[in-house]
Amino acid sequence: MEEVKWYVMYTASRSEKKVADRLRDNGFEVYLPMIEELRQWSDRKKKVQRAMFNGYVFVKTTRNKLWECLQVPSAVKFVHFSGQHATIREEDLDIIKRVIDTGVGVESDGSSIDLGEKVVVIGGPLQNMTGEVIEKGNKDYFLVRIPGIYQNLLISVPRKFLEVTI
Image (cartoon, rainbow, N blue to C red):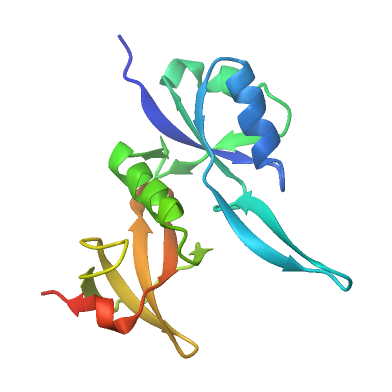
C-alpha cells in the first residue's frame, strides 16, 4: 500500500480556491490556508479572504495519484526539491492552522532568511511556539519556518511575549 502524504501543488495565479474546490469535487483531501485582510478601495474598505501562500494548495494523496490531481484546470505542477516531490508534515500544517485560528496578523515570505535569534513565545495565543525573530520596520516579528515548502510565516508578536532560547 502506497503511503498517503500531503503534497505541495502549485496553481495558476489567483486560482487557489478554484483548484482546491475542483480537487475536493474529485474526492481529494485538500488544505488551503486562507487569511482575512482589509482591502482599501477609493470608496470603501472591505475584508477579503486570500490564500496565505500565493499559488500553493496542499493535497493529501498517494504518489501514483499526483497525475490525476494535475488534470483539474489551473493546476500547474507539484513542487519539487532536489528531484523529489515536496511534501509537508502534518505537524507543519497544524502550525499553519493554529496561526490562522489565533487571528494574529500574518504575512508570508518565501525569501531566504538571515539567521536571527531563536525564540519561544511565552505568552498569548501562540504560547510555546518556537522560531526566530527578525526586525521589520518598527515592529517585532516572530518567524515560523515551514520547511516542506520553504516558506516562512512572519507573525507580529509583542516583544514581551518572546524569550530567547539557546
